[in-house]
Length: 240
Image (cartoon, rainbow, N blue to C red; front, side, top):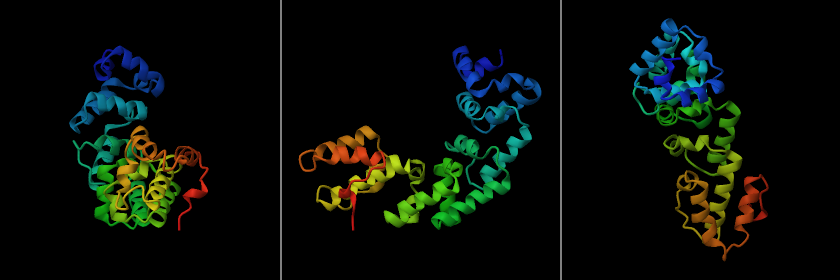
C-alpha cells in the first residue's frame, strides 16, 4: 500500500481506483512484478498519472510479466510506428497490450482493406489515434460505408483525421452530417464547409453554430436534429 500511494498521487485516488480495477495490484508480487513493470513504463516515458490511467482501464497490466509488456512495446514501435514518449503511446499500449503480434498485424490489415489505405496512411492513423485498433470489423465497415460511400470523403482525408472513426455513427456522425447537408442544400451554409470541423466540435458549439442561427429560416431544425440523434430521420434529410 505504501508503494502504491505515490503512484496514485493520494490515498483518495488509490481508494477510488482499486474497486474499479478489482484491486489486482494488491494481490501481485510487488518486488518481482509490480515494481519492474512500473519502472519499465516510466522508461517508456509514462508519468505516474499515465500509469494510473492504464491501471484503471487494464488492471492486469501491472500484474503480467515485464517481458510481455516489452513485447507489446516493441510491436507498438515496429508494427504501428508509435515510439516511446509519443503523446499517443499510452493509448497505443492500451489498445494492443494484450494482443499477440499476429492479431495486431490482422488489425492493421483490416484497416488497410476497409479504407483502402496504404501502409503509410495506416501509420498516420495509428500514430494519431491508436484507439481505432480497438474497433471491431463491423464498426469499421459501417463507418467506411457512411464516410466514403455515402458522404463521399476520400480515404486519405479520413487517414489524417482518424478521430472520425471514434465518434458515434448514429449519435453524432449521421445527425450532424444530415444537418450540414440540409443547410448546404438550402443555401444556409457555404458548400465548401469542411465536414470534420462540424463533427469534431462539442455538442454545445455545434448547436450554437449550426442549429440556433437558423431558427427562423428552418424552425423545424432543432426537433429534426433531436429526432435524428435518436435514429428517426426526417424526410427533409432525404437528399438526391
